[in-house]
Length: 473
Image 1 (spheres, one colour):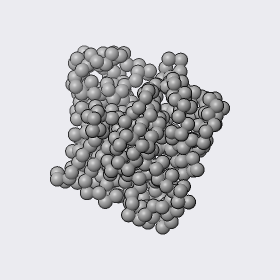
Image 2 (cartoon, helix red, strand yellow; image 1 turned 90 degrees about the vertical axis):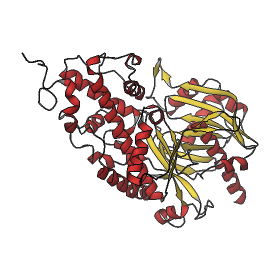
Image 3 (cartoon, rainbow, N blue to C red; image 1 turned 120 degrees about the horizontal axis):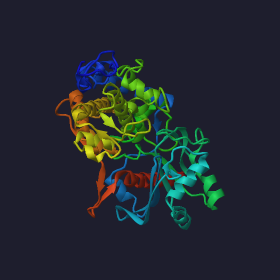
Image 4 (spheres, helix red, strand yellow; image 1 turned 90 degrees about the horizontal axis):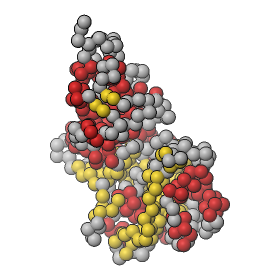
């Protein structure tokens, strides 16, 4: 009897499962990082795609100006509530600008969207969603009632088309992601739905100023703001003259924008579809195709399915399942259909913290091969992200990268941000200047959450401009 008599490998060859990294499995599943020539092609295609998306209304000028430390000094005594919406974790804080320093005042609200003790992403209606949102942050509605003149700045992590109204900046919701299902939300005004809810459920009838911002668009002090966590997206700082070349010379003119100013554009970078042909989307055995087939948005967000933490976990789950099949279940114990593998689990594997993954047991004989698989998944995601970022820089004409990045995957996955930087230098040269930032340090020495801080700053900037335009009109 041979040493291994388990079922045939996925490519029809009998093999020791511990040799999976050196067999045709990787080739068959197209599990690899981009080659240099392919990275250049992806960057070039991304550059072209951005202009096309802006023209077709698939990338969204946000009517937000880039902000800076100088902006803070101009907005003294402004204030806003910042509410984060769009993930299972929610946060809300009241922010004020005291003599040029942004600070949180009063109670801080945090919660998670849950139903029956479980994380919730499926809701019966917008009202059901708002119920879960405000129930998770008890006391927030009362605080809003007590301060009727303080505007709401809502960080909205889903895709939508910005529309300026007499109340502020609204979103027509065009797509939900991350598994969220909210019947009645799509193609509707978010602020109208929220106003109706606050009026009908809580008796709040004030015509309060509100503004919705995408979570990438608020990261607007840098030339690129990007989110690389459960999902993926980025926003760019684009000169108005360039936007008018694409959208017509009257774009944003009545709102007072000048040719030499810059506006933040939400690229919706997860929706390009560029990466599909390089990762074998038309091959049903490829890793990308298998991940896509099991997703709720099949055929969409292919870049996200290569880069984001959610889908890296899905990819690893598929690979571990394959490994178990050819090892007769010896490689990983506790792996079943309901198992969820997170980016934190990938981090623990890469760091050799096998006992920190409580729901799974990894056979020591297979740990090296599993770690090697995680390295391939990480490097594939990192070089894909590098290529997409360089495409954005080519579009704007920037000659350096100063990126504000939110997302646990980017900052916590060992070696990831270093690989992203390596990929960018492969395309742009060793002397290319790269800076990644994820927190903001104030003069008091405290580090602020980038999403909350820049949500407050973007809100104050928008409402300041909004009032100036109303007075001018």
